[in-house]
Amino acid sequence: MPIEHALAALRDHWSDVAARLDEASLATLVALVGEYDDADADGRLDIALELVMDLGEMLPASHPVRRALAQGDMLTRGSATSDPAEVLGLFDNLFADLAECAGAASALDRAVRETEARLLESPAFTARELRDLGRDPADAALIRLPGPAGEQRLPAFQFDETGAPRPVVLRINALLGADLDPWGAASWWLDRDARLNEAPSRLIGNVPDDDLVAVAMAVVEAGE
Image 1 (cartoon, rainbow, N blue to C red):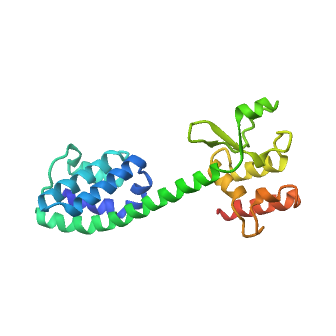
Image 2 (image 1 turned 60 degrees about the horizontal axis):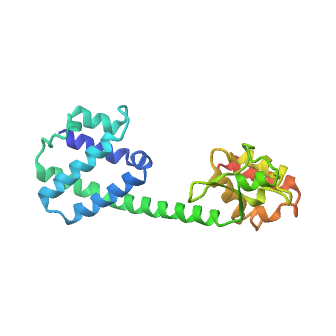
Image 3 (image 1 turned 45 degrees about the vertical axis):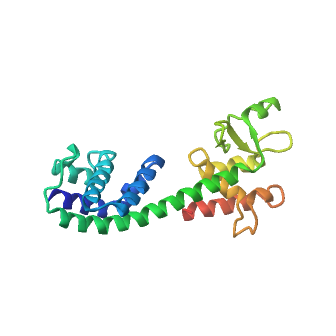
């Protein structure tokens, strides 16, 4: 029963599969879940097979779900060999789980987008503006956020009144891995920190640099 094996693999490894979904794949999943609820039995079977096959095709060959599909030769979009009613019973349970996961993923995606939009509202320089001030914005430790028009924005708190990068910011950005996770680093600086009872960016120059470094280090060590 290849479809049952594929379903079991998809259920067991769903968190990993969901983490691999890009925006387009997530939108497709949400749409298929909605169509499944409205379809008759034959339509549901077609939609369910389409979903499993589409997910399988986007996974690497070594992935357990992909292997389960390949073992049943289902990646050629062949039909299930099991009794359709039995298969639909399995799909009903799986799609209930997928609907919940899809809703959670959509909510998470919206939250991420809202956070990014909020961070982009903070004062910032473009690389061109910094060069106009006679400053080189090439330091790898600087936070660079991709703006809506594709131009990078460098949050202004990173620079002093002359446009020079603040040493404490560069030091902490390196700790936070700003080159790999600029949004996470920007969020640490611009959002209120419970230990400091304030956004760290507002405390630059008002508290000892070492105090800010210590709080950042604690975050890194805790894996927050």
